[in-house]
Image (cartoon, rainbow, N blue to C red):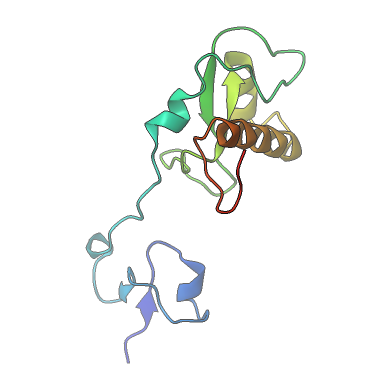
Length: 133
């Protein structure tokens, strides 16, 4: 029997319920045969940062420069790997730089992401089944 190896590191591939994921290949095949997982991209979400105020508000740096949508990479995410477009916050230049440098506590980043997602939901950019603004 050939052991299955998931080059995409899906948790369920290593003995989890439901067996291997559809991207797994027998170990004898090359990694090139497995497609990369698709990233959720949405220009309306990232463009929504225009005209917004910074949700991170990391003192004493906050306030200089325009606000952009900042993707938050967690531990283990490579520098070439962007998270989905709903996983980020509105941030000014100094706050964005502080977050990317790892100077901002994760709890503060999580608060900023939550606040950004709430703003997006209120603007109708994110929808939650059963919830109406």
